[in-house]
Length: 230
Length: 289
Ligand SMILES: Nc1ncnc2c1ncn2[C@@H]1O[C@H](COP(=O)(O)OP(=O)(O)OP(=O)(O)O)[C@@H](O)[C@H]1O
Ligand SMILES: [Mg+2]
Image (cartoon, rainbow over all chains, first blue to last red):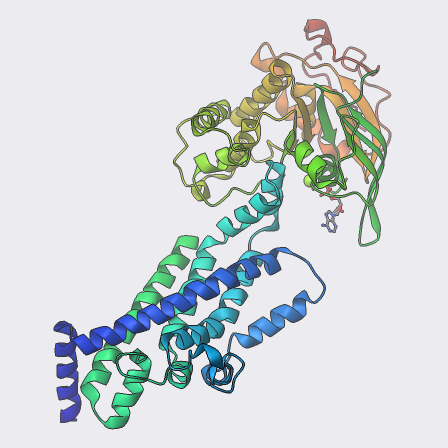
């Protein structure tokens, strides 16, 4: 048990002293996941809004597929992106494998279904008379759609936060397409996996604490948002 | 005769194969105060949704100033910007009262200063001055109803449609709204279409009354639009009449024993307000059956 306590204490020291390595890893993690979220939100939110507002043949099927993909295993996404980006893959010439860009791509794909699915839930949850009210007050189609989005804003924000939580906590894809290269593609989760494997716990503990704090922050934000809806 | 403001012809609406609405011919003239009355499920809301072009009929046409905009996006938008509807259970956007009332003005890209001015005026007209910064989610039902009304009149529509605007209000606020309706109708010349259950309200407001039952117009009357002089004109023996004029009497054939001083049967201009056109206190406007 002793070495656990010592590891924990050293970990806290690492955090308090703003250790360069810890700091660099955390920063990269945030950069990769935030970028991935922004990208998938830019694509996923408009798509989710469109699907949520429109009626079209195959909508049910689309929603079912999206819902299924919400639980997409991270290693499957890793495999997919790896094969696309590897030398022999169709996008191999870009030379993106084992770069942060590859990790961003993988995480974007990973959370896209989550963003789309939760956006659809949020939009379809808005009282349909909101749109009619907007129209009766002179809104054109786009303005009416925006009014619906505004009504769903808390749910949409919650979707973003949930997606971020999934992105920053995943290991599989980041490990496979990032390669866990020190100083370049090593993020919180891959570093924890590596250090634990090596039996060196202090860095792993330090990063674990940071990750937990991020998770706690996310949960608080989500809770606050849900309280705001009521 | 000039083109009616709104006209419906051979209008039909079906839900699940059931015919909900069947209107042969209905004309609402410019500047008219039009009251649509009828029991629950008569199709009043359905009719209003069609007349405001928020819903499409299954058969027939609705004309606005002689033009049927259904089918053309640009014509629809232009007509929708000239009329507005306050729904039976109005939705208040999850934001401040100010932003709610400003909504119709913002989508028309009005100047900020002008928006502020119009919002302030509209709120004061519905008796909600100073409510601008209130969270619209925390309003009482009656306040919410009036915010919805303020939001509608802020855009200064040519036609204002109100689906049971006073159903959730207390007597004082009903009076405020009815006075406001008279003001808008008479001073601004706005065409007003109101759905109501309240036969006393019909009597208090007067105008072109359309009786709807099972989706069809069973009768049209033109009642004098009285200008209330004393409160007793507005609220005559409320309790007794409320009983007599309750909508449960809305069956069978109507109209043979209307007091002649109350009902102007000829179609045409509204009667001039005056004591001779005011119903005697306590006299039922509509027969008890
Ligand atoms: N979307 C819908 N789907 C199916 N049936 C509907 C729909 N809307 C209305 N109806 C039916 O159409 C009929 C007329 O409804 P409508 O709401 O127009 O009545 P109303 O006169 O406004 O009644 P109330 O006084 O209760 O408001 C009712 O029988 C109602 O059940
Ligand atoms: Mg109704």
